Structures are given as C-alpha cells and as structure tokens.
Amino acid sequence: MYIYTAYNLCIHSEIPLPELMDSDGPPDVIIRLGKLSHLPPETANWSNRVLGELHGKAKVLIEDGREITI
Image (cartoon, rainbow, N blue to C red; front, side, top):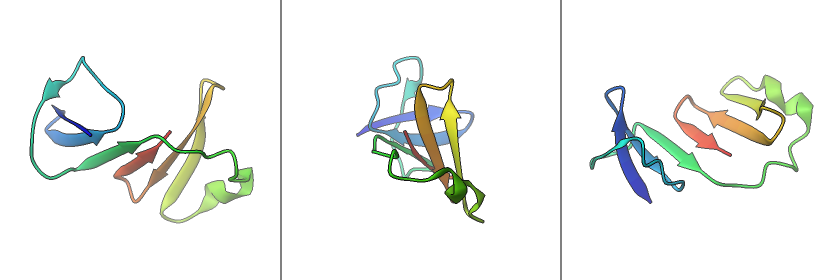
C-alpha cells in the first residue's frame, strides 16, 4: 500500500499517486481497487455510502467519508 499526504490528509492507496508527497501515519482516507459491477444503481441512496461513476469509465464507492473503492 502506498502512503501519501495531500490537503493535510494521510492517504493510503492501492493505486500509485506519484503527484502526491510520500508520507506515513494512520490513514484519514483509504483508496482501494475492487469490483463494483455487482452493485445495482438503487444502492446509491445508502445513508453512509455514495455510488457514482467516474467519466462513464469506472464506478466509485465512497463509504463513511473515508474509504474509496474504484
């Protein structure tokens, strides 16, 4: 897992983000790769989750305001 800092947040990411500065510490945000194709569109109205699309190319699930699955 890669560890970065941006906007005063510590970001742990499974995706390399070379434009960000390397860091260490406990995560404020976690970025993961995962399969989201099994989630139907009606699940987008959860109280602690948001499901969306990124430029029609990938689904993005944000949970609890700190975990992002692409």
